Image 1 (tube, rainbow, N blue to C red):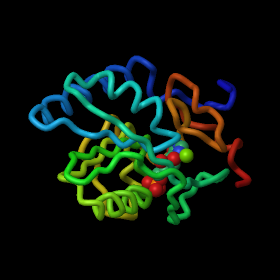
Image 2: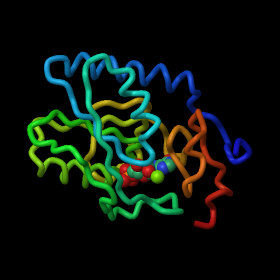
Image 3: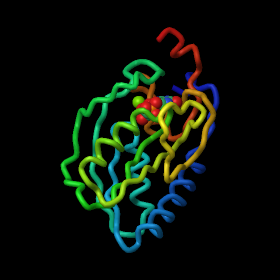
Image 4: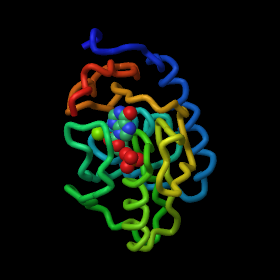
Amino acid sequence: MINDIQEIILTPEQIRNQIKELGLKISSDYQSDPPLLVGILKGALPFLADLMRSITIPVIYDLMAVSSYGASTKSTGTVRIIKDLDIVIENRNVIIVEDIVDTGLTLQYLVENLRSRKPKTIKVCTLLDKPSRRVAPIQPDYNGFEIPDVFVVGFGLDYAEKYRNLPYIGVLKEKIYQNT
Ligand code: IMP
Ligand code: MG
């Protein structure tokens, strides 16, 4: 797998430290009214797992799955809910936990969809942000790292379901996805 990676841009240690910071920030912001973390499968799973353990106040979490790119590196903009929440979010403080905000189309759909269920508040926490590619006006409230316009994998992020288990975040060699 390492042969498919052009460059490691975030090491496990950098990721760990930054998630710790995000957890402390969320803990202090939500002290009086603990949040419900909504992890977006599958990419956000490692991030969610580390983030919730960095949060020092009581939290609960649930999971949602939405359709992604398939075996392509470009967003289609069409979002479909594949697995919905089990928990009713009405009157709760929701934090959507995502792996990366790219065009923002996925989150735009998700925020709109969840907002219609009348949560008390709704915020977005993402591990990575690629602001240069934004199409929808989505601004994460909590962000781990801003990255340039490169296709990255690892720490939950995939290309055609591969590389999610890499402990770092790396740029995928272009030849791997050239013909998709
Ligand atoms: P958006 O709707 O364009 O913001 O895309 C969000 C989703 O696209 C993320 O949840 C990822 O699954 C996927 N994605 C966007 N950029 C990358 C990347 O660089 N590597 C892997 N997946 C990505
Ligand atoms: Mg994906």
